[in-house]
Image (cartoon, rainbow, N blue to C red; front, side, top):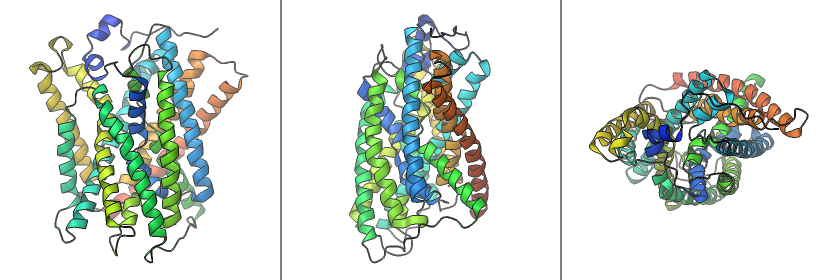
Length: 455
């Protein structure tokens, strides 16, 4: 018989209470279909961070690189599938959860878990927001440098421009209102993945192609740290940490719909991840940078592929980054809306519109400021993966499933879930240590508001 833990009172709502919760009513409207969830999931996972895949392979090599990439794909799909089953289980028991923190606190019955999830989600949202703005600013800089090689504008100025655009887009009030934006995001990811692969093939045949070298670092210690950093980057690329909030956008009953969205998402992952990882690492090997587009457009020397291909890819990346920033801001916006808005006044009333405008603007300014001040795109991805995505996407779903569905301890499901928890707890710890170590080492290579993104 399946155990059904009794609901706790901390931040768990009756239907009446939820109707009075502005965060739930406004930001997390439950109106979507399964394909809308697929659009949201794809935007949350298949983003321009996949351009760091050749860089992640730099610390793993061919065999271990593809092995870790495949393991991450299988484990995350399995993890998200279990999470959707846990959410479906709670919904059937009369407790539909629309927030990760509610779900964890209810199932685990621990008040501190509520705050732990808030902390981790905040780290993810802020880290991804900073990374998205930083990479978008870098894309603008690439376009500007191509059109005006002797221009005087600096990276932080492009970051300021992107931040201004994000401030405007951040005023879209609900997660569900992003469904068409995220459909566009899905198509853009397929578009620039195709263009990058074509560009890599052309670059490999170019006379200016770099010498291909796939050797790892000579020191065993450095090689181990690089491997764990690369694994953390892969975890960040595959992670999202907001699956319950995405499932919350589905019109009830949500049961079974999320799995269809996951299949859509992982179909796109299969096409894009392996193509970019393989082609990028094949051409640049251990010289791959944290943005493969920069490798294709070196500062010294001509571009390694036709400018129009690279320019179009950069534009596609830039446009998708706007959607990425919006998706990962939704949890922060939901928290803001819950605390500041009055659900009785209406979503677009003056009472709610002014606080929304101020708070979301301040949040985007904060992300933009840190993106300009700390240009560590590759390192940011690794740290966020280790301390954020690994706990939420590789550990908690298995733990929550074992508690809610109570599989026999002798069963393959229980053993598999326990093994994943143990292995990825260790990987997360080592990844956090190695990622933070690299972040500290890189911090010595630049000054604040540098014009260069450190790999």
